[in-house]
Image (cartoon, rainbow, N blue to C red; front, side, top):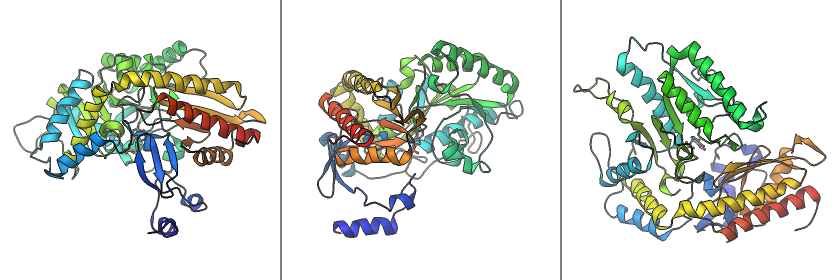
Length: 452
Ligand code: PMP
């Protein structure tokens, strides 16, 4: 198809996710044809720095020869075989690697293919865990403690444990009931210090548990950063405090590392920063280096053991997707883990993260740049109205900034009035510099009418 035919067919046939199609169809879309390292190329061969890592997934750059090779080698053997009742080589090898690199308590790997599915599985496992232990004693356990502004995906179970009204309010009649705790982000709270915020939240959680303990299956949270709500960073010791409460009251701790896992926040997993050892961990996005869809729900030995029986339909976890443990996808994930080691990527991120943070913080001298927050290579910059900095910048203006960035070779996204920086994880220092330079120039062009 030529360019015009592609644009027309995109308008005619494709329904884009999380997109108001009425607005999308007003402009010609950028149609990506290929990628190379940190760059995306459209069908006119225009290059864009991938500042959103193709939706927070890309780790080692696009079109990486070693990832391509691992995938094609596996394709030469078999593209798919099922994990329902049998096994395949890459899924076994990957499970062993995942258990080795994740917190010690996590001993088993249950595969799926999206972050939402990984969370859906975690919820069902946590619920059934208590029933398998003692259905009568734990009959009331059917709720989860969740966080205000949390996001865990778009399937009904994942929406049920979410807390973003814009995305979730419409589905209120379909979802099951949970208990929501205040958002653990200082700028969203009335507290003055992180220590006071965490202390206040601990009290709030303790009160909930003391009143509803019998109903609670688990505590579900995004550790360190609530991403989709606008990159809301938490004090690192918040998750540690939650872990201590979960241990004290015998509640399963379920961490959703779909976005934060695989180096995104500067350590391999966000849990590492606060030395947290969860019962269940959800992984997806960066697990294959951002190449192919794969997710995993990892559990402790104790959770796994509660599902063991000698009889077929007794205590069995009746959940499994057709492509669970697909060998090609697992082969990509194994190669991605090899590359993490070979390229010392976590060390590299400590340098690029410092540069990104410094450059974004330097923008705070502009009175329309508000809160800057994040960890690793996951940052959000809050934009205000230049004529009234107490107000958020209007969305059409935010969109003009994003558009100007694209015209100058940077692909980034906004979450409402927050510009998000979640670049390809192995971006070089000069590419990080270029990314923030383009953003700064776009701010000047759109908000101060200065030409770039
Ligand atoms: N959990 C978190 C923390 C996420 O950020 C996301 C997606 N952005 C999901 C779950 C859902 O993942 P997926 O889009 O792969 O279903």
